[in-house]
Image (cartoon, rainbow, N blue to C red):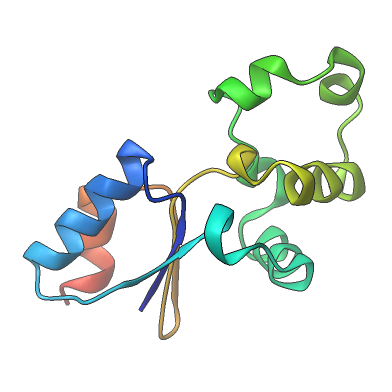
Amino acid sequence: MKLYGIKNCDTVKKALKWLEQNGFSPVLHDYRVDGLDSAWLAKMADQFGWENLVNKRSTTWRNLDEAIKNNLNRETALQVLNEEPTLIKRPILIHNDIALLGFSEAEYQANLLK
């Protein structure tokens, strides 16, 4: 089980806490520490849709140039996400054949506690 995100993100912390309380031992892949693989990011864009990977509620999004925000497509989004990993919606959980974007306790329960 691997959880992708940033260790000081509150949502990532909530997901880690929930997973540990429910008997899982996730490995955290911190984009800032462990880096970001562009092939993996493209795969996640295929899995979730590139639009869903962009965290439009983040400070990074608010600080992005308006021209970039207004002209995003898959190619430019992946480029910006590679350059600014804090713009990626967090966390991304990968476990066996399960891939979840963001943290929702109900979604985690439905997919992981079968």
